Image (tube, rainbow, N blue to C red; front, side):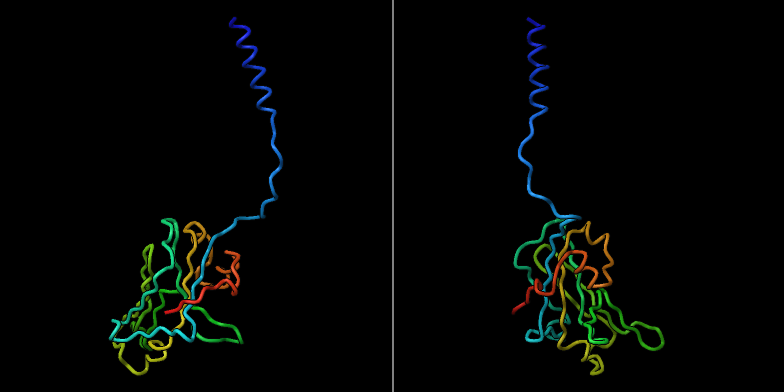
Length: 172
């Protein structure tokens, strides 16, 4: 009896291990990154004033995953016809090398706060940095962010396989 059970077990193992189902659809080469980019446009500038304590908040439309990270870029102008996106934190210095002001941010799974801090934020000279600011907020998986040059917005977009048409407008 033991020999018959052993024989059935061996035959069953061979039969089931050689079974194969239909071939699945072809996959994409490389890694598929799920990322999202948000931007406040010129119709919705961010302003850093004493009234808002030099801080603005963007609430994500849905909660982020625990494994997501947020990258923030400030529009710094145009150079040779191309937009310049400056990665935060961003610090500006006086001519003597001392810190003047900084942009920085904090985030949770439901919002990102972008804030400005420094010596004399009410100086009219800082209006070009305090008023009418545009930001791009990028949400990507943490393991992706660890492998990409975060200082270069274009490289982040390219690595995440995102296009300008996929940027979601922030409306308030």
